[in-house]
Every structure is written in structure tokens, then in C-alpha cells.
Image (cartoon, rainbow, N blue to C red):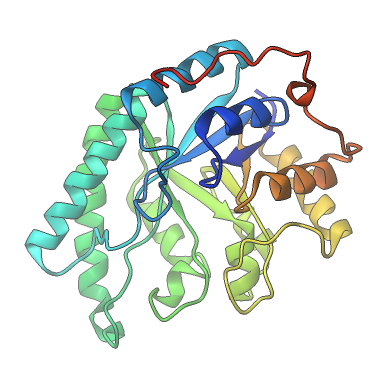
Length: 284
């Protein structure tokens, strides 16, 4: 499988309208499971899951998944909070397996305000949770990919510069554990993205831009030559990986895809009125 670009599912379009457009541009789609990112257009109903399968069989694209992250703390010091997070994560992994999704990206544990001094405790609890999840991952055929984060008081600096991720790679040698490298997060954190490309078991990438102060998930319209260069390096070094364009709007994803791939902008064939819309959303 050659390196390919994918789309993060958007929340401002009905599922059928999104799929009819996205499948003619992208070879992969990342599904979100965090409640903040879901919408009335897509909530993993049985009909929606069946529709995704039909489109996938017809257009032959890959699926990846992003685990919930808001208030989900695998390293929480409170036992009940930690077990709630583990159970939510287990259900996410089962959903991924049901959809035949191999890669599930997740965030490192956030810190409570003003508790950086308790990071050692958070780290140990998080490692215990990951070890438990990896046992189930082996059974389900799922690979868990931890993502580098932007610089923020919510995260320990070690999850921004990659040192925590490297530590976990040493600790968990199983092939069911790996990394998602978020280029936009690295740029915001002031870390050279190339440093992450030297790490082992990188399976997945997220592409988006920002102003280096906030995690804005902007299109790749600034520093185009730099983006083209790093895209070329990534696609050559990681031929089996997938790069997801994480902008909020599908139009921005397509614009960025055209820039990276060097394609001339074009309209989807399904925008022509004479073309049939196949298949419609099931259950509607």
C-alpha cells in the first residue's frame, strides 16, 4: 500500500453528502468518536455504519478512527474516573473492530490544573491503562497510536516534544502500539517535525497549519513549498502510512490535498447532475 492522503470526517454536512464528495478525492477517511466532534449528521447509527461499509466496498478507501479525548483521562489518579475512561476506550476499540478499522489514534492524558508535580503518578496510571488496553487490542486486531500534542498547560511538555512518546515506545514493544505524528501540533509547540520522523512505529500522520500560538487546524496555504517538501519526505519514508488532512471544512481539505499532491483543482464527478448518487444514506 502506498502512502495516501485522507479526510477527517466533517460535522457540517450530512453523511451521504460528505461521502459523495470525499470518496472522489481521498483514499482514507478518519472517523471521530469524541462527543464534541459528533453531530446530528453522524452518530454511528446502524444505518450510518452500513452506509459507510457500502461506500467503502464501492470506492475502496481505508478507514481510521480517532478515540474520544475530552474528559477521558487514562492516567487519572481517581480510580473510578480512570475506569470510566478505560471502558469508553474499550468500547471505541470494539467499534473500530466492528468497522474493520486497524488504527485508533488517541491523546496522552491531560493534567489537572496546577498539578505538574503529580505527573509521575499520572504517567504510571496511564501506563497501566495502556497495558490493559493493549491486551484487548491484540484480540480485536486494533493498533493504538498515541499522538503528539500542542504546547498547552493541559499537557506535560514531554508529550509535545516527543520524549514521552519515545518512553512509551520503549515500554510497549508490541506491534499493537505506535504513533500518530501531528505536524500541526509539532509546529505549534515549536518542535521541528522532522524530529518525529526519526521515531519508530510511526503509522499515521495529521496535517494542518496554525499561527504557532494556537491549534487552529488551518489549511496548508502558507509556506506551500515547505509543506510540499515534508509531504514528499513523509510519503517516501513511510510508504504504508496514511496522512489525514484535519481541517474543519471539506473544501479546505481538498484545497490542501491539491497543494500537496500538485493536482490542479477540479470538481467532483458527483457534482454533475447527470451522475447518479450511489448509494443513498440507508434508513433515510
